[in-house]
Image (cartoon, rainbow, N blue to C red; front, side, top):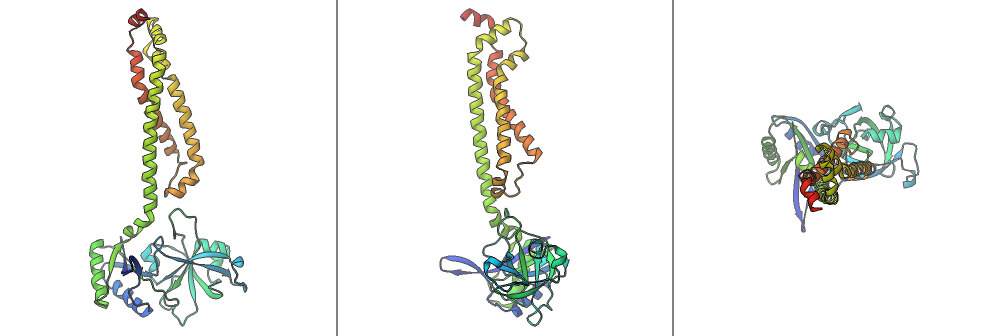
Length: 353
């Protein structure tokens, strides 16, 4: 399934900003929805005034239905606010948990209704079941009825905690921004071309840009990708420093104990015993350093989760993999000095001494 978003862009000063198609009216938005839905291969079509995780977005103070004093100190939640059309949930891939979806009957003549997410239901009503057919107030006392509860999502950043969100009918509350979402079984390039032709059929002068959902998600993932690359580079640098330090320490240890190792070999010590004597101290330091690094990584897991999306430093596979990798790198770094110890000719060494 491919998802395509259509937006209009217009230059304003030196910046490019996302704006509507130039028709802020629900009638034109309805025509756009109907025209897009008629395209072969369009499985679901919906409208939203601004994309979650995109540029812009707004929130609003929410109050319980019994509230009469709308000062910020009395708010029940600070919720993200979206204006959507019927079909948006299907196009965006958002599940309806309880109640019903918006319909075109939810127009300006009908009572004001809203969809809310699960976090909103828990925070304002106490549970999902209590929220359906319940009421809340927003925007200085405007009253709305909850007709459905949808699953939670990400609205500002990928690393945010769960946020309350509410979704209003585009026929009851107008907005200047227009994003048309289309979920299709066709190739993204094909459906994008069809959408552009269809929108130009409504207005030949209308500038239309079609993008895939993954392309739009690029901005949301940009910070996480940069942080991942930066942390990866720092990790590689740290590994190089560790190899250099372990190699130097092992070389110094072997050079200081060269006579002792020669005597051991002269007395019949086996290769395994010589290796143990040469690598014992580096191995202990590696083990202690790995354990300390794992502990510090776990303690910093909260910080890491705000930087890298879906980071799981407490994953047992990750922890075991890190420890084994560091031990392997350390042993490889100490192997060359150890080979020097094994290559010692005890007769020549003791004659030189």
